[in-house]
Length: 321
Image 1 (cartoon, one colour):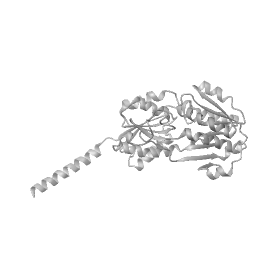
Image 2 (tube, helix red, strand yellow):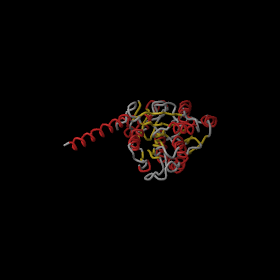
Image 3 (cartoon, helix red, strand yellow):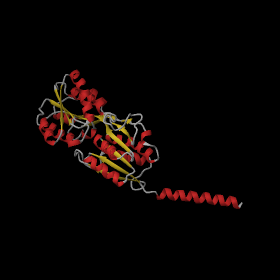
Image 4 (cartoon, one colour):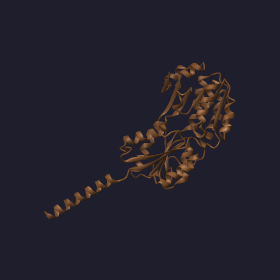
């Protein structure tokens, strides 16, 4: 009986010690890195939402250290180095520059990315099924979706003959998208004017050339704040523009087609949770974005004198009136 009591007591002490150790563990620290202009980027908000649903509650067992670089080229390298020095448990990134900066900064800390169009082409991972290294995440599939954006723009404006594609010269994903556009443009009867820009001055000069009757394809990258600059120029020139994300519709963009930023964050949260619980990043295949949305702003269409085809309204996930 005494042996039984001793064993029971030992098990009880062990259980209490394990519970206390679990309770005493410091919250997981997630470093967030992107080129956004504020801390509440939709992908980050989606990450927090997804992790809450999986039991990781901010201020309880998880904390976030958010670095956003306001579209400044190269600033992500220093921000990534800061996160590594701070010793975060995992780095969550959005877009190629932040992802590649995180990869350059550490081969030890797990990195989960979102909003990366072609993770293999940019050098983030070795293959999608077997990422290798310390990175995995969600591909936004941007290059393969860009020709469809051009098709939607042409459907809105059948008389369109000239379309500008303005993007940051150093962006691999948008360069890959351009290659696919070269094949799509002649089939749609439009002249494609690709303009890779290196700095704000070049961007300003290119956007001065927009004329009524043109159209604009907006890049996926936030570098140089190109999407916002195009939005302003398109309004002034009365030019229809198509964006890769719905967050721009309602702010002056005519149409968008692409993955939902917040949904990518929610989707990535599953990968983050698995890694925090012990799974290695290289054992988690890169996933394609689950939610691809078509959004339309009817007010902008009216301002531009464009009719919205009923088939697009029927297909749209979001319609601003």
